[in-house]
Amino acid sequence: MIRKTKEDKLKKYWYKLLGKELYAYKSTCRDQHKEMHSLVGVFIKDEPEELYKGTTMLHAFKLIFPPNKARSYYFEDPAEKERWMSAIKKVIGYSSVYEYYQIKGTLGKGKFGLVKSAIHKKTGKAVAVKIL
Image 1 (cartoon, rainbow, N blue to C red):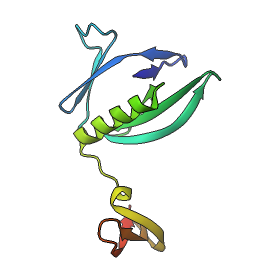
Image 2 (cartoon, rainbow, N blue to C red):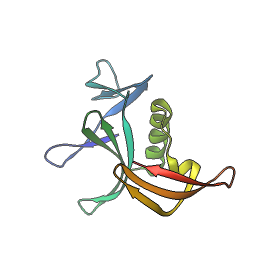
Image 3 (tube, rainbow, N blue to C red):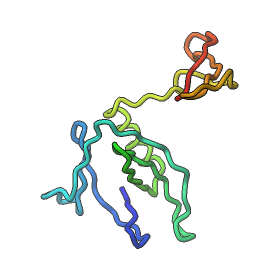
């Protein structure tokens, strides 16, 4: 995976997913990890493609750590990004409402969110979904 430095340079790190922890290494020798992040309570967000300095297309996702710290991880190969996202989603128990429902129009608004009409993809049943 690639990270951006504060100076907007790209730096490659090697990562290892062990249980619910993501370890970062400076090199492939993996003698001593540089940092470790617990993935407990973490959210994952797909990010749009980005053309870096007009020459390199980067594919990214963002991990959002509680209470409100986020880190972006970049890849030159979109398949590698998808492989990592899939592995991390599995570890954190990720699921999205969009995987189960086809969201339609807004039925109403409340103090804590929106109520949308939706179709349950598996059963085809019409339902109401509250989105907070």
